[in-house]
Image 1 (cartoon, rainbow, N blue to C red):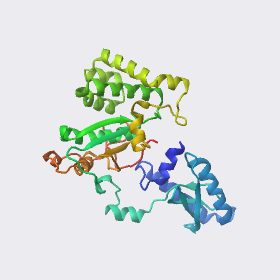
Image 2: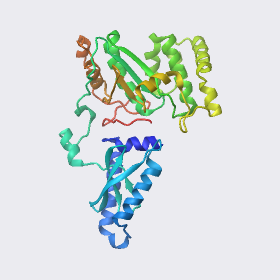
Image 3: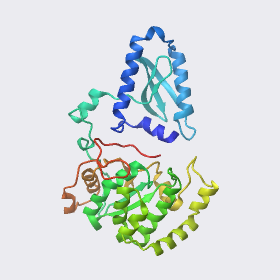
Image 4: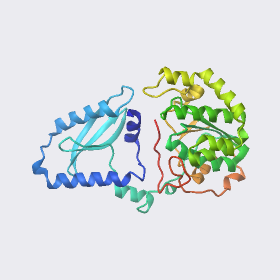
Length: 335
């Protein structure tokens, strides 16, 4: 939880579905304290700064890191705080009485200026570019099988990978810890073994799983050899002690059980969340629609193939399971 909140603070965009809620809370708070200040006992700046830094360090920081408040001023009837988080300055707000803390404020004029309209869509943002080039780009996507933002990235990247075919070396890998319990550990064992034993059937299985979130019917529809799958899952589980560690609460990362099948790769790239996209050894913060991902991947070629001219959807897939689309992009993650 602490890692998730810390990542939220550091992000510059938020999910479209919570954007209206955040704006209503902020505007409502400003209005309340503008017209009811006579009834509220406000903190002075010193006390507000002390309360804010105590709150951030107690509940929002991970791994023992400490934040500091480098500046506090008054703005829009609130305290505006410049919070130093591991050398990153994040602007946050707190009500003058110290009761409500806002990790991030959204500048409406700035957002409108970036998109050219009032619609903050991922399609309007430029596609990320890979600086490390190669003849056959190596693409590694780290996810948790039940992370809604990991599944979102998978839904976006599969059409791009299918268009590019054998011109890229693409692998889906799993984070070294699982945030969604036993079902996630089991699903990741299943997917690892399908990729290992029956790779030609993996996309068929995965697209079915991403649409409905149910494994068993997808094993059937993709014609997975369940006998071979069971044998592989059993041996992999035994090798990495996935379920034993889960049940005995051994080798946990904080409150989350480990999944060590790709532990070395997680450590190599310092993977911190789902999804994490690595292209030619470089971590890339890419948009999650198929068109943008194709453009990003194609920027990693020394000489881009004709497949890079494919026309793919620029709609951002919805987070979680299902086949819908999102009204705006997101860089949120499970971490």
